[in-house]
Length: 213
Image 1 (tube, one colour):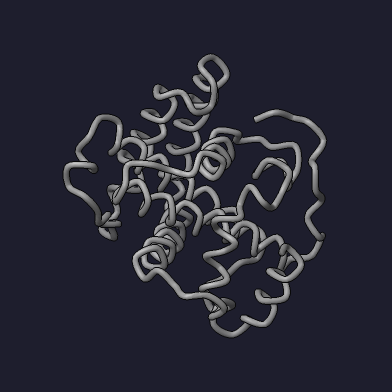
Image 2: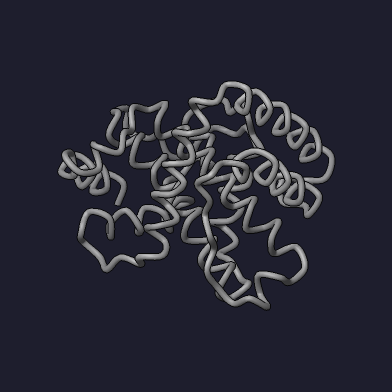
């Protein structure tokens, strides 16, 4: 990720930062669904997720998602469904909530957190050489997910076109996207995000989405 000055400062309040981080989770969930069904993906949304996962030491909160909330627009639109303003895609919501559940399991496993940190450090070196979205980097992100998060009893079963899911690089791309979802889920938790707040503090999430619209 480039280290230019962020284009758009995020409002410096917890609810808005939580909304942006949660948007990353549901953007990942949305792209997993799109990949599994069509084999295609929104390039801007994809690049934002992958660069955020590769850049393990961003210079600011905004730098994580490339400096502008519209880089997370796909995920922000999913949050509008979460608070009842738009029709929800139940498959995407299931993936998103599963990522939050897996993130909580990961947080409680310090050995796996350390293992994942080492793997992402290696991926970052690869990205510096090849570029963030090079297929070698995507393969390494997918491998990192498979060797860590995929070993939990809770698993995300991806639905889609079987022939598409078995095509070249597709398993790696799906896992890399899920890895990005975990990265944003951890960010959400670091910013004070909790699952109970999604039930009892929906008004705060709605206000944050209004600020970002």
